[in-house]
Length: 215
Image 1 (cartoon, helix red, strand yellow):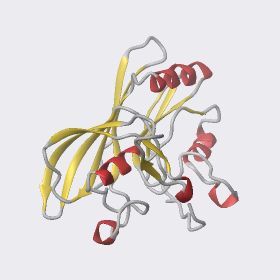
Image 2: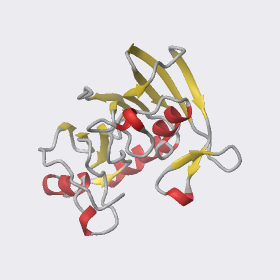
Image 3: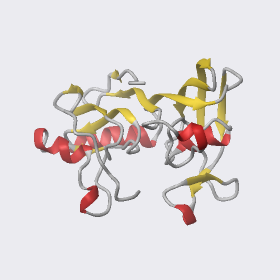
């Protein structure tokens, strides 16, 4: 991540807030947590602390990804939801625009991932040392040189959706790390966290939160 970090100056988009959890529609281009160095200090959790000083991190979205993200407002909620992510009880759904016509209409990518140490923060497929990673996909429609897809990760590896789509020959449009040529020539990464399902830490009731993709 370079020093050309120019996060968007937009109001917080609060989807839901109660005594335990906070659901935000994160804008693309904003870090979830601070990066290394003062030029990467502006981030979503820092902005949230002004209005919600007790806010606690549960998970994160990549800087260039927009959409639904959950924060905890109590240590109990942080532990409860953190365990749900660890045990894969949460269900995440993303919308993406990818290069090319993706066929068949549905399927699963099952390719192990690991950090590409010589090119950090990039990740790569490695069958010898990679960690298990699976992503379900469903094509919503194909138009011209691109497809609109719904992506449902079963695991939560770093850059998982981006690398899995690249490995299939269909990089996500606008990806500054993994797309090349005309597939990269977009004003943002076309990846959005559309829906998150989890169990509420107060009582365990199943809840879901959605934010429509802005592209």
